[in-house]
Image (cartoon, rainbow, N blue to C red; front, side, top):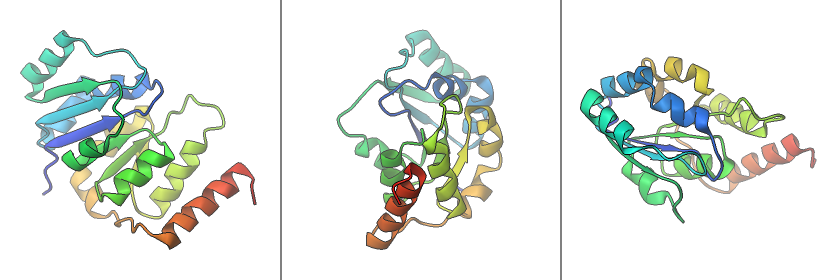
Length: 176
């Protein structure tokens, strides 16, 4: 059974309050606690800051140390630090996490119109590299996480996979 002691959540450069809010819900924190999570780091982007009272509550009630920030020039150290990454569906974030062979749950922002991020997440899921969901279905995705993560295929960085990724993006954007 895998342990996900260190979990990193990233929303990128925009606001994705639904993701941050669901991560801090009792239901998700309980699931993270059952996965042996001891450290939770949230990059909340342009969204609202997480207050000290909420941070203290998470640590006292769930035994999970919470660390939060808005932006960093580079999140690679957070990716390599983590045992599990929960991310928005940005192409750069997905590829960076997968290249570093970290288990990845992509949460698509279902409020965006014509959301190409959903198509990207679906394709990487079909290829077996990640799990994906919406904020409303994150609970189901985290349930029995160990079993789901062991079925993921490593993403092999390199020219062939990058070209497959670029071709998929070109098709999505209508640049064939």
